[in-house]
Length: 268
Length: 264
Image (tube, rainbow over all chains, first blue to last red; front, side, top):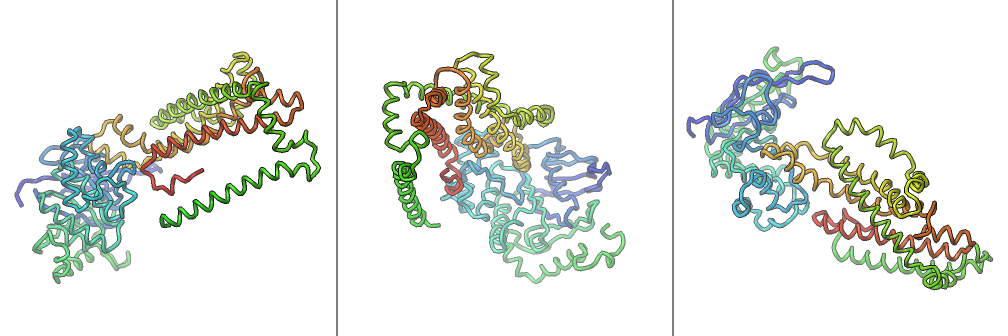
């Protein structure tokens, strides 16, 4: 891991005007850095503005205050260095699997032979080669999500923003997909910010975990995951130290405590 | 459902459908006689077949059928194109939709066939007022379906394209346009049958061409078999239009799961 910072948020605040005219602060003064090749997870209660941060990073929304940087360049709109992947696979039903993988590079105007070469290579590494000419409805949920990952990687982004990418698939498929993602990120040396509410997923997949508070979302803790083999989340699951990290995250997130028991100011 | 199950169901269904047809024809031929219904109320099948052949030579049945078919095709194509155009434009511009929706709604509620006499007063006893009624009647189901389809495209899909730096045109051609295909074809199916209604009403109101004219002519002569023949010809014209839409639909929507397309 180098010292080059690939993704950075500097004092990012996001306010929305609600229907009632009230100001709603979704994210408050968030600063974070992700180094080259690093995988960082962002966890926090629902509605704490995690997805807002992702939209800001991908240039889809501008922050109310502060700024985001990718590769040292200020994010002022969608750019080719960032690609995102959501819980929904967002595959286009009228396109074959290979054509879906090419969706991003096609928009970016890459020549057809290069697009096809990339799609074939990615589908092969993700063990989907034989489904290249199938349509999305012919694939299982887990396979469709792997296609979405291939589409994200096809544009060869420096930074991947992943918003609960596996929360819609069943538990076993999720473990497979997590291993697939971990190996792919390691092999390609990609930098990633992973938003998740699955504590175990955060610990087993990441180099570092950031904990966000309830709204207005702020970063309240940062945990360095000192476990070997980030590309082997299944092996990591067996490591007893994982439980200590999960326990610490549970404490920070006040999981299992009623609101009355929560220490004032810790999360509010 | 496995392949063999569905093909068994298909074979059985087709056999039953044929049986119903035969029973229907038999009932038509002998039912009126048995029930003592006079032939000027319900003429038996043989009389209608006889009238059909007579009309081929005496009443230029095929000419009138051709006129009606041409009007249906023209009205359907123009109405669909206009419906698509407005559907996409309004779908992409919420402001235009809000501004125009009360007028569109008013026009949609107004019974389109009621415009037929007005159009004939404007354009005379030509084929144009008939085509215009068809255009008007086809326009709405197509436009409403396209508009809704464009409006209900998953915003995350659009965001995905935007994140790849898609232009507005790319978002339209790569997402909104293909996403609107299934509802568009649902609208076209409805439109293809409505086009026949529009044309016939136009022909009934005025002129001396088309199946609608023959319908009025037969009525004036109290020639019930002629009215029956004309209704059957109209059904055939509408059926061909509907089947043509289905044929194109299965080509365009080839990517859909087979069950979702269904027959009729």
